[in-house]
Length: 356
Image (tube, rainbow, N blue to C red):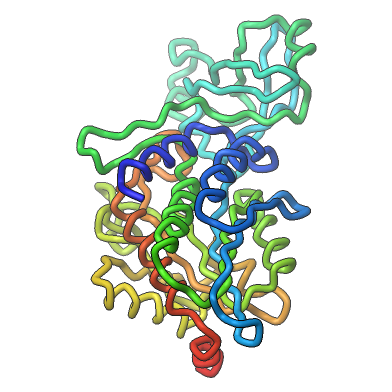
């Protein structure tokens, strides 16, 4: 797969709706891509997308490596239909209210209904209120419909996603758009699967696009329990560098993925990722994470009796907004690293990791 193909896949995934709990459209888009490079693609009982790629090891030497990235995005949910056709809402996932006024949205009801997030104009606010962030309870969605008509199309509980066309910036390397957290991770897994069509591997591979990570790692919890892999690597995003942010808290775009180190991760597996990157001259950064990573890696690490787990993260600017931004070269480096790591996995190597 070349860079142009990967860009096209990421642009498609970003533009597709897939709010936590309502990911079907995003799963469908990802499924069509995984089916090109894997042996079997299915949904588990929770709805997670599972793409299987069989390894060459005989039955007595089999092991399974899971590569997981969540496919859901942050969004909103309808809580009330106001007189005049205005919608009140709450958040699905961690949304910063500062980014909401003026956003275009689509309500996924009996009929898809577009609208905008509105708020009282600053001219009508007191000087004190004008200096504050507008709280959720004072925001609303204006669809242009009256409430009687809107009640035919929308119900309390319907999900709401953001309308934002993704853009490939003029550099040809940087992409901005919504839901790059974590469609970028899913795109990296697709790139990895494509790379592995030209590599031999002993391990059976499970590529997992998990659901509902943004509201509690739920898809990862069920997938880890059901699949029982021998090893796992979660792929997510981390904070990219911007002016005014401590360089210890953010990572440079274009310098490769960040590899997690800390108690949420299996030390030998994390080090194996670094060694593999060095062997193949793939750029990477190291991210110290002293506690819960807040990613699917946590759910896999503590599933059943424990699964050796590592984390690879793509640096991303403006996380949890509609203009998230990343460097496509970091996805390529991450996908290649995952493919080379998968290619070296075998039963004896697993024994070495477990013995450490």
